[in-house]
Image (cartoon, rainbow, N blue to C red):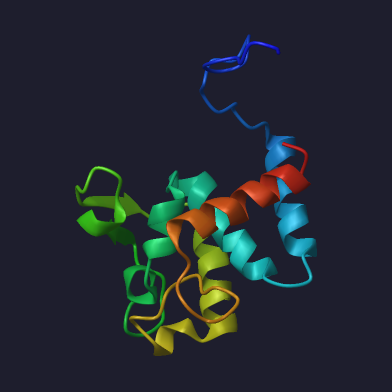
Length: 147
């Protein structure tokens, strides 16, 4: 019986690789080509890549966290302690023009500004994504893109 290997595979550091610009373009092309949930995939990728948010943080976001009362994208995203890994609040600036554009289009397409406590990314059944399901959703995108 072969001996079971412990720890990480030989030659790996345990850190995620740095994505090249062509990898990011491939991810977004894949997200846009999805027959269902293409906008949700784009928004999740934007929040992950542009802001460095974790799956739990993306899954926990409410529309009022991103959009103001008039449906405009906020300048600062306030992450509550319950959303974050270390249970510490933090502010993230929504400064990237591409991110703001994606969020504005997503808000208009989904009418999300009318329901402030609705989850930003709703599951297929219309409920809230869980952290694990958001992580699987993102992982599936990366696998489909060959990353």
